[in-house]
Amino acid sequence: MSAVLEIQGLQKTYRSRKGVRRAVDGFDMLVEAGQVHGFLGPNGSGKTTTLRTLLGLIKANGGRMSLLGHEVPRALPEVIGSVGAIVESPQFFGNFSAHDTLSLLADAGGVHRARVDEVLELVGLRDRSKDRVKTYSLGMKQRLAVASALLKNPRLLILDEPANGLDPGGIREMRTLMRNLAASGMTVLISSHILGEIQLICDSVTIISAGRRVAAGAVSDVLAQHETSSVRVRVESIGDLTASAGALREIGAQVVVEADHLMVTGIAEPSAITRALAARDFFVSELAPVTVDLESVFLELTGTTPVEGVHRQVDQSAPVAATPNGGWGL
Image 1 (cartoon, rainbow, N blue to C red):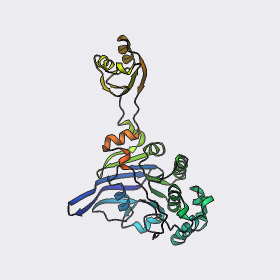
Image 2 (cartoon, one colour):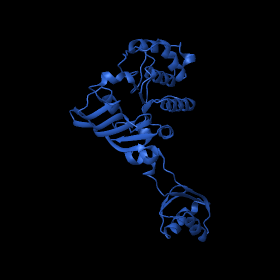
Image 3 (spheres, one colour):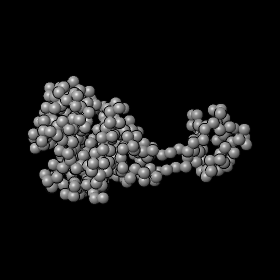
């Protein structure tokens, strides 16, 4: 596979009265063609700065970037027609309908108007396409933003929090759409804090923290690198937890006592746990290996919680100015 997006040593600094802040500090990222790639990091980690720099919205202080094999920002005019993107909160004219909004963008971008109905169908807005945008829910506005990014049928689609405001059914539909787009040959880069969705939908991930890459690769490989041999143990009586922990430590286990269970490591065979506890008349009610997931890896690598990284998107029903090269529908 060839690289559709490549970043090497990206640097972005900001100066203020408090001194110099490194928003992005030697960051690297590689996205292969045809993948759905997750871009993860807590608030303030440099995700949005990276995306805005990549799309020529702000200027980097150092490093190298390329899109579709062309170095950017120098060659951005040559490749932007093959890139669709929404970055940060999408904004629309509230008194326009979704169909009107997309028709104007299609005209501005030289896209045939037949594509408007196609993308409205793709994102599930066909039945509400003639309603004013100010009557839309947050999730519907997010669907409209995705539709605007799809207008040009891009080779690379960059989406910042595409599931923001969607209900569980809408999230599932968005997941299916992303997978179908990748199956058709489109490359999709998703920045999101819904880590369970990223694990389900993405082929590969890059995790950024404090402006630096802390993990990258296939989702399965990133998870495998952080696998543990932990076992969750529950006994019939919570009152026996402390004594049970002592019995397991006697056979060489490392044990952490939680509120209603034990976390046990250092034991090669789980059967040794049941034997040791049964010998002391402690009876196991649950014995389960702890499987690592993307959320636990994220927490370990960034030292934050997903809640700390959630973007809150404000109501965009009020009319605002927007251009084809603004923060949406690039």
